[in-house]
Length: 376
Image (cartoon, rainbow, N blue to C red; front, side, top):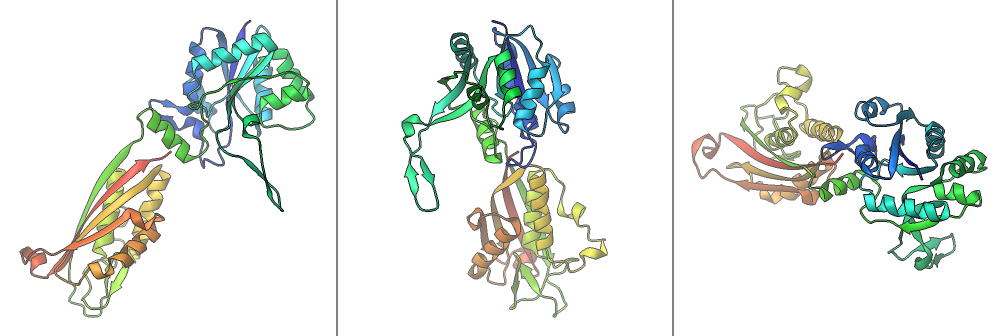
Protein backbone atom coordinates (compact mmCIF):
# COMPACT_ATOMS: atom_id res chain seq x y z
CA UNK A 1 0.00 0.00 0.00
CA UNK A 2 1.59 3.25 -1.16
CA UNK A 3 0.16 6.23 0.74
CA UNK A 4 0.08 9.95 0.01
CA UNK A 5 -0.98 12.81 2.32
CA UNK A 6 -2.67 16.06 1.28
CA UNK A 7 -2.38 19.01 3.68
CA UNK A 8 -5.26 21.46 3.22
CA UNK A 9 -4.08 25.03 3.83
CA UNK A 10 -6.39 27.02 1.57
CA UNK A 11 -9.04 28.14 4.09
CA UNK A 12 -9.92 31.82 4.45
CA UNK A 13 -9.76 31.86 8.26
CA UNK A 14 -13.00 33.87 8.60
CA UNK A 15 -13.59 32.85 12.22
CA UNK A 16 -9.92 33.35 13.07
CA UNK A 17 -9.73 36.82 11.49
CA UNK A 18 -6.46 36.09 9.66
CA UNK A 19 -4.65 33.29 7.81
CA UNK A 20 -4.22 30.89 10.70
CA UNK A 21 -2.19 28.25 8.84
CA UNK A 22 0.77 30.62 8.38
CA UNK A 23 0.63 31.96 11.95
CA UNK A 24 3.80 31.24 13.88
CA UNK A 25 3.63 28.32 16.29
CA UNK A 26 6.95 27.90 18.00
CA UNK A 27 9.63 27.86 15.32
CA UNK A 28 7.28 26.87 12.48
CA UNK A 29 4.06 28.08 10.86
CA UNK A 30 0.96 26.12 11.84
CA UNK A 31 0.66 24.16 8.55
CA UNK A 32 4.29 22.99 8.72
CA UNK A 33 3.75 20.99 11.94
CA UNK A 34 1.45 18.41 10.35
CA UNK A 35 3.39 18.53 7.06
CA UNK A 36 6.60 17.54 8.85
CA UNK A 37 4.82 14.76 10.78
CA UNK A 38 3.43 13.19 7.61
CA UNK A 39 6.73 13.64 5.76
CA UNK A 40 8.58 11.78 8.51
CA UNK A 41 6.08 8.91 8.72
CA UNK A 42 7.62 5.69 7.35
CA UNK A 43 4.42 4.66 5.53
CA UNK A 44 3.77 8.01 3.83
CA UNK A 45 5.64 8.25 0.54
CA UNK A 46 4.58 11.73 -0.55
CA UNK A 47 3.04 14.91 0.88
CA UNK A 48 1.40 17.74 -1.05
CA UNK A 49 -0.04 21.05 0.10
CA UNK A 50 -3.14 22.83 -1.18
CA UNK A 51 -2.70 26.56 -0.55
CA UNK A 52 -4.59 29.81 -1.10
CA UNK A 53 -3.67 32.74 -3.33
CA UNK A 54 -2.69 34.76 -0.27
CA UNK A 55 -0.37 32.19 1.31
CA UNK A 56 1.00 30.05 -1.53
CA UNK A 57 4.24 32.03 -1.79
CA UNK A 58 4.86 31.67 1.96
CA UNK A 59 4.20 27.94 1.81
CA UNK A 60 6.27 27.34 -1.32
CA UNK A 61 9.24 29.04 0.34
CA UNK A 62 9.12 26.53 3.20
CA UNK A 63 8.05 23.36 1.40
CA UNK A 64 11.08 22.19 -0.54
CA UNK A 65 10.23 18.56 0.29
CA UNK A 66 6.61 18.76 -0.88
CA UNK A 67 5.50 16.66 -3.83
CA UNK A 68 3.41 19.66 -4.87
CA UNK A 69 2.13 23.01 -3.64
CA UNK A 70 -0.96 24.03 -5.60
CA UNK A 71 -3.80 26.52 -5.39
CA UNK A 72 -7.04 25.32 -3.83
CA UNK A 73 -10.59 26.50 -4.35
CA UNK A 74 -13.02 28.72 -2.49
CA UNK A 75 -14.38 25.80 -0.44
CA UNK A 76 -12.93 22.74 1.24
CA UNK A 77 -14.47 20.29 -1.29
CA UNK A 78 -12.99 22.26 -4.17
CA UNK A 79 -9.57 22.22 -2.52
CA UNK A 80 -9.78 18.46 -1.91
CA UNK A 81 -10.67 17.90 -5.56
CA UNK A 82 -7.67 19.97 -6.62
CA UNK A 83 -5.43 17.99 -4.32
CA UNK A 84 -6.73 14.62 -5.45
CA UNK A 85 -6.21 15.53 -9.08
CA UNK A 86 -2.56 16.33 -8.34
CA UNK A 87 -1.77 13.03 -6.58
CA UNK A 88 0.29 10.79 -8.87
CA UNK A 89 -1.48 7.64 -10.06
CA UNK A 90 1.24 5.50 -8.52
CA UNK A 91 -0.33 6.07 -5.09
CA UNK A 92 -3.27 3.88 -4.12
CA UNK A 93 -4.15 5.46 -0.72
CA UNK A 94 -4.65 9.13 0.14
CA UNK A 95 -4.98 10.77 3.55
CA UNK A 96 -6.47 14.26 3.78
CA UNK A 97 -5.49 16.46 6.70
CA UNK A 98 -6.50 19.97 7.76
CA UNK A 99 -3.43 22.20 7.97
CA UNK A 100 -5.00 23.91 10.98
CA UNK A 101 -4.57 20.70 13.04
CA UNK A 102 -0.86 20.94 13.85
CA UNK A 103 -0.51 18.18 16.45
CA UNK A 104 -1.50 15.03 14.57
CA UNK A 105 0.64 12.18 15.85
CA UNK A 106 2.49 9.51 13.94
CA UNK A 107 0.48 6.91 15.89
CA UNK A 108 -2.83 8.37 14.70
CA UNK A 109 -1.62 8.29 11.10
CA UNK A 110 -0.66 4.65 11.53
CA UNK A 111 -4.06 3.75 13.03
CA UNK A 112 -5.82 5.40 10.11
CA UNK A 113 -3.68 3.60 7.54
CA UNK A 114 -4.31 0.24 9.25
CA UNK A 115 -8.06 0.83 9.13
CA UNK A 116 -7.91 1.77 5.45
CA UNK A 117 -6.00 -1.42 4.72
CA UNK A 118 -8.79 -3.33 6.45
CA UNK A 119 -11.96 -1.57 5.27
CA UNK A 120 -10.92 0.71 2.41
CA UNK A 121 -11.64 4.05 4.15
CA UNK A 122 -11.14 5.52 7.62
CA UNK A 123 -11.26 8.72 9.62
CA UNK A 124 -10.13 9.94 13.03
CA UNK A 125 -12.86 10.79 15.53
CA UNK A 126 -13.26 11.35 19.27
CA UNK A 127 -16.40 10.56 21.31
CA UNK A 128 -18.32 13.56 22.56
CA UNK A 129 -17.69 14.26 26.25
CA UNK A 130 -20.40 16.90 26.55
CA UNK A 131 -24.14 16.48 26.97
CA UNK A 132 -25.68 17.39 23.63
CA UNK A 133 -29.09 18.80 22.81
CA UNK A 134 -30.76 19.49 19.46
CA UNK A 135 -32.69 22.75 19.66
CA UNK A 136 -35.84 23.57 17.73
CA UNK A 137 -38.21 26.54 17.99
CA UNK A 138 -40.42 24.72 20.49
CA UNK A 139 -37.98 22.74 22.61
CA UNK A 140 -34.59 21.06 22.80
CA UNK A 141 -34.09 17.33 22.45
CA UNK A 142 -31.48 15.43 24.44
CA UNK A 143 -29.23 13.38 22.14
CA UNK A 144 -27.57 10.09 22.94
CA UNK A 145 -23.99 11.18 23.61
CA UNK A 146 -22.68 7.63 23.23
CA UNK A 147 -23.54 7.76 19.52
CA UNK A 148 -22.02 11.20 18.84
CA UNK A 149 -18.46 11.63 17.58
CA UNK A 150 -16.43 14.74 16.83
CA UNK A 151 -14.63 14.33 13.55
CA UNK A 152 -10.95 15.02 13.07
CA UNK A 153 -8.42 14.45 10.33
CA UNK A 154 -6.76 12.45 8.86
CA UNK A 155 -9.58 11.07 6.78
CA UNK A 156 -8.96 9.04 3.68
CA UNK A 157 -9.15 5.87 1.71
CA UNK A 158 -8.37 4.31 -1.62
CA UNK A 159 -7.38 7.05 -4.07
CA UNK A 160 -9.82 5.99 -6.80
CA UNK A 161 -12.68 5.68 -4.29
CA UNK A 162 -12.04 9.17 -2.93
CA UNK A 163 -11.69 10.71 -6.36
CA UNK A 164 -14.92 9.17 -7.65
CA UNK A 165 -16.80 10.07 -4.44
CA UNK A 166 -15.87 13.72 -4.85
CA UNK A 167 -16.45 13.69 -8.59
CA UNK A 168 -19.92 12.13 -8.40
CA UNK A 169 -21.28 13.93 -5.32
CA UNK A 170 -24.56 15.80 -5.81
CA UNK A 171 -24.20 17.77 -2.55
CA UNK A 172 -21.45 19.66 -0.72
CA UNK A 173 -20.29 18.21 2.60
CA UNK A 174 -17.92 19.38 5.30
CA UNK A 175 -15.74 16.28 5.58
CA UNK A 176 -14.44 13.42 3.49
CA UNK A 177 -16.42 10.76 5.34
CA UNK A 178 -19.67 12.25 4.07
CA UNK A 179 -18.50 12.00 0.46
CA UNK A 180 -17.40 8.40 0.89
CA UNK A 181 -20.62 7.40 2.62
CA UNK A 182 -22.70 9.15 -0.06
CA UNK A 183 -20.87 6.89 -2.51
CA UNK A 184 -21.93 3.87 -0.40
CA UNK A 185 -18.42 3.29 0.93
CA UNK A 186 -17.92 1.93 4.43
CA UNK A 187 -15.79 4.21 6.61
CA UNK A 188 -14.18 3.00 9.82
CA UNK A 189 -13.82 5.53 12.62
CA UNK A 190 -10.50 5.24 14.42
CA UNK A 191 -9.67 6.67 17.81
CA UNK A 192 -8.64 10.31 17.49
CA UNK A 193 -6.68 12.40 19.97
CA UNK A 194 -7.60 15.31 22.22
CA UNK A 195 -4.42 17.11 21.23
CA UNK A 196 -5.33 16.85 17.56
CA UNK A 197 -7.54 19.92 17.86
CA UNK A 198 -8.22 22.41 15.09
CA UNK A 199 -7.09 26.01 15.38
CA UNK A 200 -10.22 28.02 14.62
CA UNK A 201 -9.97 31.10 16.86
CA UNK A 202 -7.11 33.18 18.33
CA UNK A 203 -7.81 31.45 21.64
CA UNK A 204 -7.10 28.09 19.96
CA UNK A 205 -3.74 29.40 18.77
CA UNK A 206 -2.95 30.61 22.29
CA UNK A 207 -3.82 27.12 23.55
CA UNK A 208 -1.54 25.57 20.93
CA UNK A 209 1.31 27.85 21.92
CA UNK A 210 0.72 27.08 25.58
CA UNK A 211 0.94 23.36 24.86
CA UNK A 212 4.46 23.79 23.49
CA UNK A 213 5.47 26.46 26.00
CA UNK A 214 5.15 29.13 23.34
CA UNK A 215 2.76 31.76 24.72
CA UNK A 216 4.76 34.97 24.76
CA UNK A 217 4.03 37.54 27.45
CA UNK A 218 5.71 40.94 27.67
CA UNK A 219 5.74 43.85 30.10
CA UNK A 220 6.14 47.54 29.33
CA UNK A 221 6.80 50.56 31.56
CA UNK A 222 5.54 54.09 30.98
CA UNK A 223 6.28 57.31 32.83
CA UNK A 224 5.07 60.86 32.29
CA UNK A 225 5.07 64.12 34.23
CA UNK A 226 3.41 67.51 33.56
CA UNK A 227 3.51 70.78 35.44
CA UNK A 228 0.33 72.58 36.42
CA UNK A 229 -0.68 75.26 33.93
CA UNK A 230 -0.86 78.96 34.77
CA UNK A 231 -3.95 79.15 32.53
CA UNK A 232 -6.82 79.07 35.00
CA UNK A 233 -9.29 78.12 32.27
CA UNK A 234 -7.39 74.97 31.28
CA UNK A 235 -9.19 71.83 32.53
CA UNK A 236 -7.50 68.97 34.36
CA UNK A 237 -7.90 65.54 32.76
CA UNK A 238 -6.70 62.36 34.43
CA UNK A 239 -7.51 58.88 33.14
CA UNK A 240 -10.04 60.35 30.73
CA UNK A 241 -11.98 61.98 33.60
CA UNK A 242 -12.25 65.74 34.15
CA UNK A 243 -11.44 67.10 37.62
CA UNK A 244 -13.08 70.42 38.44
CA UNK A 245 -11.31 71.23 41.70
CA UNK A 246 -7.75 71.56 40.42
CA UNK A 247 -5.91 73.51 37.68
CA UNK A 248 -5.07 71.77 34.43
CA UNK A 249 -1.68 70.51 33.29
CA UNK A 250 0.56 72.11 30.69
CA UNK A 251 0.92 70.18 27.46
CA UNK A 252 0.26 70.17 23.72
CA UNK A 253 -2.72 67.80 23.98
CA UNK A 254 -5.01 67.69 27.02
CA UNK A 255 -1.90 66.63 29.02
CA UNK A 256 -3.60 63.62 30.62
CA UNK A 257 -0.46 62.37 32.35
CA UNK A 258 -2.06 59.08 33.39
CA UNK A 259 -3.07 58.15 29.84
CA UNK A 260 0.26 59.27 28.40
CA UNK A 261 2.12 56.93 30.75
CA UNK A 262 -0.29 54.13 29.88
CA UNK A 263 0.16 54.61 26.13
CA UNK A 264 3.94 54.45 26.53
CA UNK A 265 3.68 51.29 28.62
CA UNK A 266 1.53 49.55 25.99
CA UNK A 267 3.64 50.65 23.04
CA UNK A 268 6.83 49.79 24.89
CA UNK A 269 5.67 46.29 25.75
CA UNK A 270 5.07 45.56 22.06
CA UNK A 271 8.20 47.47 20.92
CA UNK A 272 6.05 49.85 18.87
CA UNK A 273 7.79 53.09 19.80
CA UNK A 274 6.45 55.75 22.15
CA UNK A 275 3.70 58.32 22.28
CA UNK A 276 5.95 61.09 20.94
CA UNK A 277 6.67 59.15 17.76
CA UNK A 278 3.03 58.51 16.99
CA UNK A 279 1.68 61.86 18.21
CA UNK A 280 4.51 64.41 18.08
CA UNK A 281 3.86 67.61 20.06
CA UNK A 282 5.14 69.58 17.07
CA UNK A 283 2.10 68.49 15.04
CA UNK A 284 -0.70 71.08 15.34
CA UNK A 285 -3.43 68.48 14.75
CA UNK A 286 -2.86 67.15 18.28
CA UNK A 287 -3.35 70.55 19.92
CA UNK A 288 -5.69 70.02 22.92
CA UNK A 289 -6.53 66.53 21.59
CA UNK A 290 -8.23 64.25 24.14
CA UNK A 291 -5.67 61.67 25.19
CA UNK A 292 -8.28 58.93 24.79
CA UNK A 293 -7.51 59.26 21.05
CA UNK A 294 -3.93 58.16 21.73
CA UNK A 295 -5.05 55.30 23.95
CA UNK A 296 -7.47 53.93 21.34
CA UNK A 297 -4.78 54.15 18.67
CA UNK A 298 -2.30 52.27 20.87
CA UNK A 299 -4.91 49.53 21.41
CA UNK A 300 -5.44 49.28 17.64
CA UNK A 301 -1.69 49.02 16.97
CA UNK A 302 -1.38 46.21 19.51
CA UNK A 303 -4.33 44.34 18.02
CA UNK A 304 -2.94 44.65 14.49
CA UNK A 305 0.39 43.29 15.73
CA UNK A 306 -1.34 40.31 17.37
CA UNK A 307 -1.13 41.39 21.02
CA UNK A 308 -3.83 41.30 23.67
CA UNK A 309 -3.80 43.32 26.88
CA UNK A 310 -3.55 41.17 30.01
CA UNK A 311 -3.61 43.99 32.56
CA UNK A 312 -2.58 47.57 33.40
CA UNK A 313 -1.30 48.75 36.77
CA UNK A 314 -1.12 52.56 36.98
CA UNK A 315 0.11 54.77 39.83
CA UNK A 316 -0.53 58.53 39.98
CA UNK A 317 1.90 60.61 42.05
CA UNK A 318 0.33 63.90 43.13
CA UNK A 319 -0.30 66.10 46.14
CA UNK A 320 -3.60 67.13 44.59
CA UNK A 321 -6.33 66.43 43.56
CA UNK A 322 -7.72 63.49 45.54
CA UNK A 323 -7.44 60.60 43.08
CA UNK A 324 -8.82 57.47 44.71
CA UNK A 325 -12.34 58.79 45.17
CA UNK A 326 -12.63 58.70 41.36
CA UNK A 327 -10.46 55.71 40.53
CA UNK A 328 -13.47 53.59 39.55
CA UNK A 329 -14.47 56.21 36.96
CA UNK A 330 -10.95 56.31 35.57
CA UNK A 331 -10.70 52.52 35.38
CA UNK A 332 -13.99 52.38 33.51
CA UNK A 333 -12.94 55.11 31.06
CA UNK A 334 -9.57 53.48 30.38
CA UNK A 335 -11.10 50.02 29.91
CA UNK A 336 -13.70 51.46 27.54
CA UNK A 337 -11.07 53.15 25.36
CA UNK A 338 -9.00 49.97 25.22
CA UNK A 339 -11.91 47.57 24.71
CA UNK A 340 -10.98 45.40 27.71
CA UNK A 341 -12.69 44.37 30.94
CA UNK A 342 -12.45 46.88 33.75
CA UNK A 343 -10.98 44.27 36.08
CA UNK A 344 -7.85 44.33 33.91
CA UNK A 345 -7.16 47.96 34.91
CA UNK A 346 -5.80 49.14 38.25
CA UNK A 347 -5.45 52.82 39.22
CA UNK A 348 -3.63 53.75 42.42
CA UNK A 349 -2.42 57.03 43.88
CA UNK A 350 0.23 58.27 46.26
CA UNK A 351 1.86 61.55 47.24
CA UNK A 352 5.53 62.46 47.07
CA UNK A 353 5.62 63.21 50.80
CA UNK A 354 6.45 66.86 50.15
CA UNK A 355 9.68 66.01 48.34
CA UNK A 356 10.78 67.56 45.02
CA UNK A 357 8.67 69.39 42.46
CA UNK A 358 5.77 66.93 42.77
CA UNK A 359 5.93 67.21 46.56
CA UNK A 360 5.80 70.99 46.28
CA UNK A 361 2.56 70.64 44.29
CA UNK A 362 4.03 71.87 41.01
CA UNK A 363 2.65 69.05 38.87
CA UNK A 364 1.54 65.45 38.56
CA UNK A 365 3.43 62.31 37.50
CA UNK A 366 2.23 58.83 36.57
CA UNK A 367 3.79 55.40 36.25
CA UNK A 368 2.14 52.62 34.24
CA UNK A 369 3.00 48.96 33.85
CA UNK A 370 1.36 47.02 30.98
CA UNK A 371 1.36 43.26 30.52
CA UNK A 372 0.46 41.97 27.07
CA UNK A 373 0.15 38.50 25.53
CA UNK A 374 0.74 37.44 21.95
CA UNK A 375 -2.46 36.01 20.49
CA UNK A 376 -2.06 35.45 16.74
